[in-house]
Image (tube, rainbow, N blue to C red; front, side, top):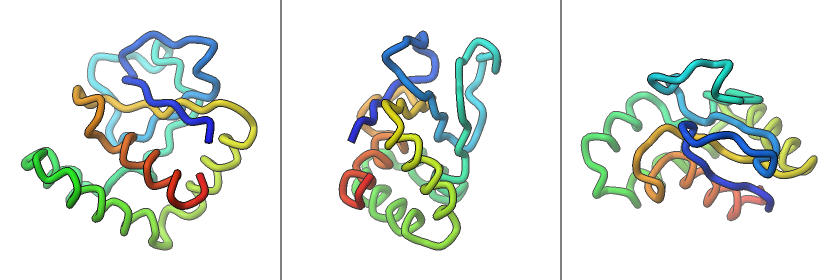
Length: 119
């Protein structure tokens, strides 16, 4: 699985491959032209309710991952997951996120879920 993670605020590089934003909200203080984003797959981001619960209680990382996995396994994001998987098969993909925590964010949870479910 050729998926990397990167904060959207870091400069784009050629090694990023296809840059895919997986946040529901557009990142603050960044112009669309400057971000270098190829795709914005906001349907793969956690629901608003789940996102808000996690921001209120970041220590509940595993509970967030479990709830997010349940959302990803539902019928809603299947077409968008197919788009992501198609891009992964074509070459490197970098999942972009805005969170400050580089280890506990929805992109990291998504990457782990993809690794378990045939990214």
